[in-house]
Image (cartoon, rainbow, N blue to C red; front, side):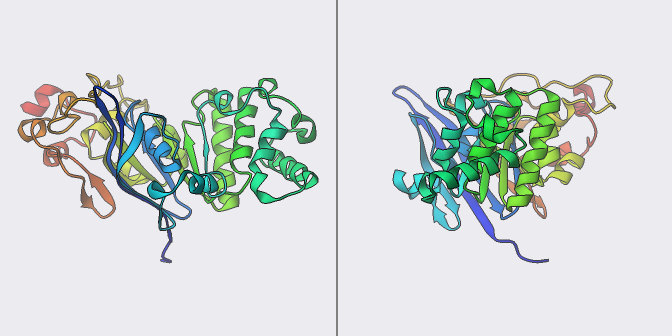
Length: 337
């Protein structure tokens, strides 16, 4: 098997929001490796640290957020230690991002033409060349009558077309890495599928790598070959997508799987309780208060992220007990006898 090159290494990333009275540990020791051509998913409930991980990579954290520890190595160079000027040179040209809601990402007072032109500012292209490239990008993302629509404003586009325009702008400089933060949440199911298919197609044509952030396991199954499940600012399970769906090992991952319809359940499972407050000191496993397997050490000691099978990592004290129940999460009386 041919060795693939490492494109991105995130090592023990810690992103905190440091306020006057409290510190929110939004990302708390996250590590993963992305290879060239990979499609990597970050999945979990709202507030688990997925989006802040992406913003950390691209240097787009909002105050009072800041990276307090770790490294983000892109092609061997640490993005954390780069100056704002150096990061501006990387954004768009080498790493691009598409967002959840294009109406907040696109400038409502500028025509689409001007917004795509901005992506070519560093290229030294003439106006005629920028126009030709802009038309080419609009065609590439499937926007009809591109010459006409370049002169229109975001509000004149449908939701799906706005998302296509945002993808055209993001990919104008042919970046090596695309970060997609819930890019289809605001769209209906039919348009969502079209946009995901488009991203997958362009990824292949341009030879990009992809990090997809979502709470939707169906999107992960469609788009990603590897996936990390996040909870309370940490990765709790990481493996290839086929293994995750066929043999989830962490109780939180199992609970997520059981909460989506698959045609086999009489009723969907729910995860009781709420995620922990990340501004409070968490003792033990952060999922323990919501986990029906939790006992003893789960409430006093944080489990490490360990490799349980080649390429399959998880953090859980009670894997031996969890392994006894490979189907739906058992009832309390089954678990404790």
